Length: 318
Ligand SMILES: [Zn+2]
Image 1 (cartoon, rainbow, N blue to C red):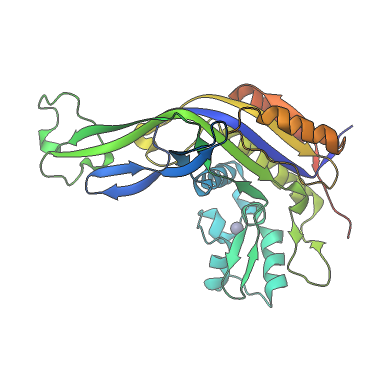
Image 2 (cartoon, rainbow, N blue to C red; image 1 turned 180 degrees about the horizontal axis):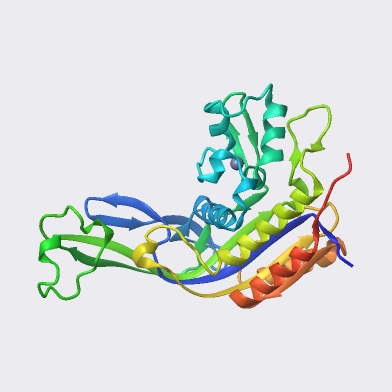
């Protein structure tokens, strides 16, 4: 029997080698990796570790959804991945909305990405809260970091025997040799994400009554699309500097937690060594509608999260 899915949490440890998915920025000719300060839950000591922001992971998830989607199911802004989403359509007067409720109604009716990923409206001021949430991916101490030194050369000087040069995109326009420094990291990253299928198509702007402003077939399509994007996300992380630092993706293990009745799924950080045991204990003590599925590789994760596409998104009665 296929059960309806209320919420899904993905908690796991991903192994990324020699990547540079997220950086602080560039000072002079040195690019600094993104650093965050955390308390290591296993040693209780403050440590500086490596981070990939939730924004970056959500951006990757959105791009995969966009690639998989039939573009007829997107608003004009999302067709070209404009980060303003439906706000852009209103700002440029491609659509007119009477009020906040109407603006959200139109967005939910029209666009797979606006509905699932959320957006902000300037005028009328409103927000569509995303149905997908990501925390920072945090390097489980110890992440190995290196700064590599590269040289770029003017086009005319290429092939004149300077061994070890890298053909970076920025080569064009450089008139003389220039040295620059780029970071890479290798490590195990704690990843957390929550997906709320029950909110797909739900217009929460109306104060008198919540309504689903999307038909069931569109809700199911969006649900499947979001899960497919998760399937690919851990096999194909496309963040910063992937032109020459495409991450070596090796592993992903953890748990998928989902509920089949209205119940927020518990989230425990995979920074903790015993997070799987803890999640299982919480699930057992709560309700039988809470399920915990373990996975031990990228393929295993893709298979198991893929099975949930046979279910339907939960629909709340109001
Ligand atoms: Zn859109």
